[in-house]
Figure 1: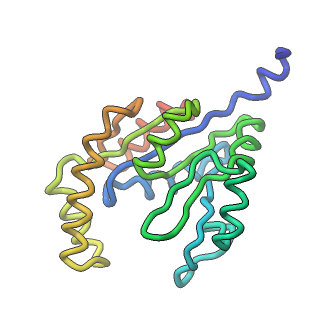
Figure 2 (figure 1 turned 90 degrees about the horizontal axis):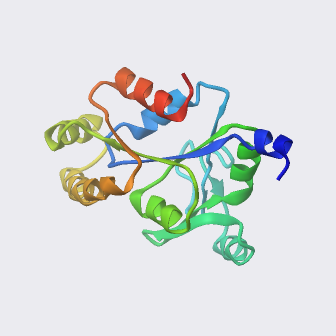
Length: 190
C-alpha cells in the first residue's frame, strides 16, 4: 500500500455499548457535534415508530431486501432482535474511514461481540452507569417504561455489565461532561 493510501485511511471505527440508561445515546449525540464523527445508521426490518425518519433514524427495509443484503455481504454485522432484523451497513463505514472520519456505532453487546469475533478493527468502549441504583433511578425517571420493563432492563444490564471486560475501555458515566471528555480523548478528538 502506498504512503498516500495509508494517510488517506486514518479514520477509525468506534463501537459504543452499554446498558439502557447508561447514557450512551446522549454521549453519541454530543460526539456528533464534531464534524469528524459520522454516525452509523442501522438497517432494520421493523416498522418506523412515530417520528422516526427513514435514512435518519434507521434505513427501514423489507425482510426480503435485508436477506438479499446479507447474501451480498453488505453488512459488517447483523442480528435478529425481537423478531426484527438489524444490521450495520459496510459501505458507509468504509466511506467514512476513507475520508479519515470516526465511524461511530451505538450497538448492543451482542453486535459488538460479533464485530470483535469477525476481527473488525476499532475502538470498543463500554459505557457504564456508576452503579445499578443510579441506573434504576435513570430508567424510572424516564417515565417511559412500565415497572416490569424497568426490571427486565435492569436484569439485561447485569448480563451486559459482565461483558465489559471484552471492551478496550470502560467509561463510567457519573458526570456526562467528564465522560464525554474521556471518550473524546480516547478517540483522539481533543
